[in-house]
Every structure is written in structure tokens, then in C-alpha cells.
Length: 387
Length: 252
Ligand SMILES: Nc1ncnc2c1ncn2[C@@H]1O[C@H](COP(=O)(O)OP(=O)(O)O)[C@@H](O)[C@H]1O
Ligand SMILES: [Mg+2]
Image (cartoon, rainbow over all chains, first blue to last red; front, top):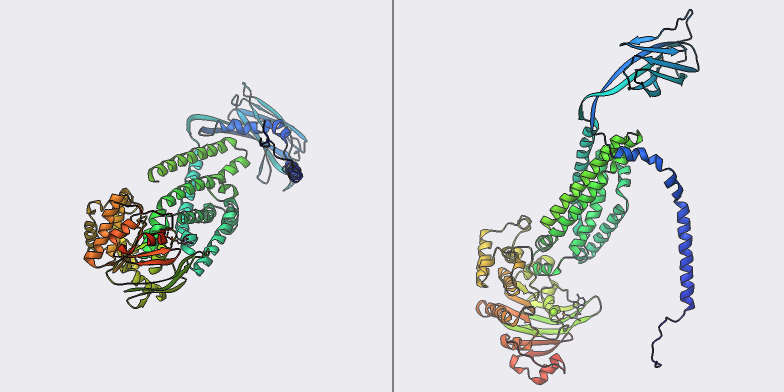
């Protein structure tokens, strides 16, 4: 060993040590608080896994094809109060027999017995009020003999009073006949077309507005004069503000403004697209080769002519690339603006989910997967061909 | 006659690139500007057509003060001054033909440029100029498909479209190999000899300057350190221009 051996360890520094400890302490506090604030609860994730089961199960069996729904209805007339000399008598219809016990009056609990009905068939029991409304009570299935017995609490009329001729309605329903494309598929296809056109319109409007504006947001073109600089900073400021507001929030704003529907979605996507595209376009303009600008200016060309011949040809490829990129984003975003009322597929998806119609929601979800990946593939192909 | 009077340029960063530069160029002269890189050659050339705005001083051309010209007048002056650059500065994605036609923009109304409309006469003129520099057969290729020497000839054709009375060339052959350099320099020389166009051309190498210039102006740190005939540059003057350590190399 000679004395010139360099020190292998960095010398200890109290300042650096304290700084590291403080940094660590701050980090611990931040993450502990974050864990609490966001109510992270891994227990729930495992415990309630059963709640997601119906959704997942239905997701793999979207309601694509259905058979014609058939139904049979039988109604028992239920008077309140009981008339004098009341003789309980079962109702009969299409060979079925419906017995109700007790058959009249303000009973608390009622038993219904259905006989000679279609075997192994779903049935729905509804209460019919004198004012003409129905209330679903219970559901069941007939046995192999076509019989069904159910007990339920008699519903109390909230409006219109108790007196009058009520009814107990049983509807048997089943599917029969050839498979046909479900109405859900038609609705989803309809909304998907709306979604794609929503993205198309928003992207087109975005390009139309962003393209001319982007020239005013390009440093290399605007910084040549004082007023140019003023315009430049103004344009940049406005677009930074517009861009910082997410598309979904714009959708909420436009739903308030122009009402629920695809127009609100188009406006929301357009505003965000204009701001985002203008920034990308401006940056494309800023990164061009300044040589041709110099050369064309030197020929005595005007500012406009210089832009047409020296700037525009150079920015066409990046403009196309950024437009395709934006189209991709807009297709994705157009599937979600509907969640807040902006039209498109999201609008019916959220409705199906709220109505617990998971098999229908599944159709919408698969449609989104297919269309978004198809558009992805398409834009990738176009990008390869053009740029 | 071009008169440069007490020209100064101080860049925003504080670099004093031209210091009280004055000289006069008679019509038909072939002036070569030499000097180390950073000596101010590009700045001087750009101050003449005001691609760079001089800080003080005047550029007077046939009695007209270019430095005082309003924007529209400046454009009318610029269209009579062709400019050739080291990097050719063609618009790469446009055809050779369109690149040449852009030399005419100073004479063309804006609406025609918006439509990219050129008259038959302009196209004929562009073809003639391309023929003159020997690359008419390349007219419909994209500019970036051409070799460096060919691109510089396109740039010369573009300058010719302006029907210039003065050509400013900023190291026009610095990006080219020696053989191509000479062919490009010969075209520029021909413009001077045959068409009587005044040329101010900056060159990096003294050997090229000696070969083509009838007069040499040397810059060092923004000052003129020599103004005279090529043969007057002896060893002592050479060291004044390029510094003590420099040795003259020959470009053939
Ligand atoms: N746009 C600019 N901004 C600031 N300084 C510049 C600019 N262009 C050139 N300069 C400086 O001015 C001086 C002269 O440069 P230039 O005219 O390009 O010299 P040359 O063409 O002889 O190499 C150099 O010091 C250079 O760094
Ligand atoms: Mg230079």
C-alpha cells in the first residue's frame, strides 16, 4: 500500500446525514397519511370478492342472442274488505288454477298456490292496486308438475287507500323459438357508431382550430417582434389553462351548458383536443430546421409566404403523427364521456350497470374493447404508411 | 455600389460580433471574406440583407439605405440580393422545381402563394436556371434525394430566379468535398464574370480565396484586418489573419 491510495468511502458529513434523516421522516409521514386518506383496505378486497362475482360471470356471457320471450298471466281478484258471505274460489285461466289464502281482507301474510301451470318455468308475483299500479312481490319457479307455492307479506297501499278490488298477478315467462340478435346488441352498435363519430368530429374540429393557432404559439416564429411575443405568451397561457382541465370535467361543464347528449361530448373532447394539439403542433414548428426560413426570407418573400414554403412542408409529417395520436386518445375518451352524460357508449354502459343488467353491460364493454383495439391497430397502420 | 459604414453588431448575449466595419464594393466585384470561424463573416453577410439586424451603422446600396428601409421596401431590396448558404437551406420535402421557384416569391402576390400557383413563364424560367447549373433532369425529385453538390446548385438556381444584382454566399462550399467545391465555385464565378453580378463570398480556406477572389477582406474578432488583392497576403499578413500557429493548407 502506498499513501496515495484514494479513500474508498465518502467522508461522513453531518449535514448530509441530517438531510437524509429528515427526508426519510417526511416520506414516512406522507405515505402513512396517504394510506389513511385514501382508505386503503386490503381486507375488503378479499372479503367482498363475492360481490364482484355476478359481474365477472356475466361479463363472459354477454347478452348477444336471445329467444322470443313468452308469458302467461293469471290474476286473482282480491277484495278489501271481505264482502259478506265470501266464498273463496280459485282463479282460472288457460287451464291454470290460482288459489289465494286468505282470499280477501287486510291479511298480513298471504299464501298463493298455482297449479297446472307450465313446469320448470320462472314466475313473477305482483300485487295489483285499485289505482292501477303493480308492485313486484316475489319470484319463483314452478316444479316439474307445474305447481308453485309462495308466501309473502301483503303490501300496504301508500296512496289511494286500502279499500277496493286488489289483484294478485302471476306471470309465467320463458324463452322459446329461434335465437335472434338481442336488442342490446342493436342499441350498443348504435351507440358505438355514435362514439366513433363523436371522436371523429372532435378530432376534426380540434385539428381545424389547433392548426392555425399553433403558429401563434411557436416561439421561433413569434419572438421576432414585440407584439409577437405578447401574442405568444397569451396563446400559451390560454392553452395551458384549457389543457389542465380534464376532458371529463369539460364534459360535465358542457352537459350543464348544452344538455345531456353526444353534442356535449363533442364539445368537451374538442376543447381538450384543441389545447393539446396546439401545444404539440407548436412544438413541432419550434423544432424545424431554421435554415429554409432564412433562405426564403432572403428571397424577399413575405412572412406569410415564408411560412407557406419554409415552415408548412417541414411540419406536415409531425402534424399527421400528432393528429393520429390524438385520434387514439379521443376514441378512448369518447367511450367515457358518456358516464357523465356526454353521449356515446358510456351513457348506456352506466345505465346497464345501475340497473344491474350486467349481461347487457358486458355487451357494451366487449364492444369498447373491440372498437378501441381496432382503432388502435388502424391508426398504427396509417402511421406506418404515412410517416 | 455597396457601401458599408461603421457597421456594429452586438448580439443579445453581449457578443460584439462586428466592430466598426466599413468598406465599399464596386459593381461587378468578386469579394472574398476570410477569417477564422467566429470572426464575424456570417454576421456581416446577414447584416447586408438584414437577416440579422445591425446594432448601428449603415448599409447603402446604390444610394438606398438598406438599414433604414421599411418592411415592404426591404423585401423589394432583398429580392435583388441572392443568398447562398453553407447548409444549402433547401426545403427538403419539396421538389427541386418548387425549391427553385421559391426564389421568385418576392415578385409574386400572396394569394398565388396560398394556392401554390406558378405561371408557365415562371416554370420555364426555373427550368432554364436548372439547366444552367446542369441539373434540369433532377427537377421533379425531392430536394433531399440530391447529393450535396447538386443541392448547392439548386440553391444557386433559386438565387438566380431573383434576377439578383448582388449575391451573398456564406461559406458555400464548406460542406462539400474539394472536387465538388470547385465545380460549385465555378458556377458562382460564372455568375460574376458572365452576368456581371456582384459577389461577396465568405470562404474558410485562403487557397480557395486566392483562386476565386479579385479582392479579399479578412475579419478577425469583428475587425477588418486586411482589405486588398489576394497576392498581397504574405506570411506576415497570413499570421495576422489566422493567428501565429496557423499554417496555410492547399485545397486542390
Ligand atoms: N445568433 C447569435 N447570437 C449570439 N451570438 C452569436 C449569434 N450568431 C453568432 N454569434 C456570435 O458572433 C460571433 C461571430 O459569429 P459568426 O458571424 O457566425 O462568425 P463566422 O461566420 O465568421 O464563423 C461569434 O462569437 C458567435 O458566437
Ligand atoms: Mg459562419
